[in-house]
Length: 385
Image (tube, rainbow, N blue to C red):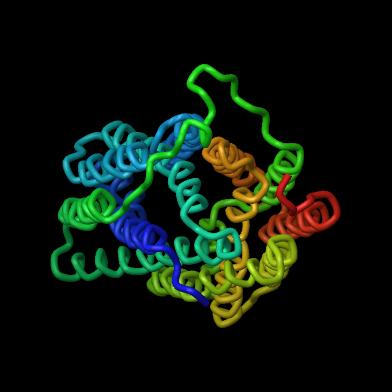
């Protein structure tokens, strides 16, 4: 296969460094809130709920704004820069609301950059390589998700100081912004390639709207991975092994994501995404029946393959179904739908788990995934509209 464009590779490095910084902090944040800052578990949920909701709404607006700009890079730099500036400030937090404010600003930065970045990836990548490009980008992101927790663990073994870990997260955060500013080149988009500043927002094409509806159905059954980690402990995975299980999952994701995207370039988006969603349903059904620790380890490895088959191809399909001048808005809508649906998905999983048990909750997630796979196959046209 031909090499990916330089911009794709550079943005992959930016994503790796950013996720490394984020994952040095994120797994330790609940312990920091409940421990030194004396917050309750409910406040931990409040922080993540507000942060992710704000991020979803920001993505929708930022994508549309980027469609009207001569270049998308300034908005991408602003997003990465805001996150990189705010995230290490957790080290100086002395009250729970400080963390809430910092985390929310961090997620605003994520919202600013996501849709414009994905639209830029589509603009610099040949159509026949879109799946591989998005898969590569997600793979680099997962490499950072492996490295970040390992670095944090190493620092804590040397000195048990959470604030030190949070402060050191500034190093990869700063490096990501420098790589982005000096390593990414973007040609100015002509007037014909973008809508006018005063023109109304064009409606999403019918095929894209159907696809987003199907994604909403799937996401309703795709709750927080925290439930899977809880199920892992129930099935016999010792608490000290949970971080290693999480790291192993991201190793599979990072190593298989580029190949998963490339498969969709060769065989089509719909067959590969459908296969991934069916695999997801099988993993959830397997976790519902798991009774040994090794069952969980095997199922988590397969779960990583599901991610590889869907993350890149899903975004490539958005790029294909959206008009070229409106890709920023299309990606904003994609992130808004998948982000907003995470809250009811997690609530549904929690209610079913508490009321009927883990097996019922996980099987419900599997059923929604299969329903979404059927809808995708029979209802969504994957040709450009």
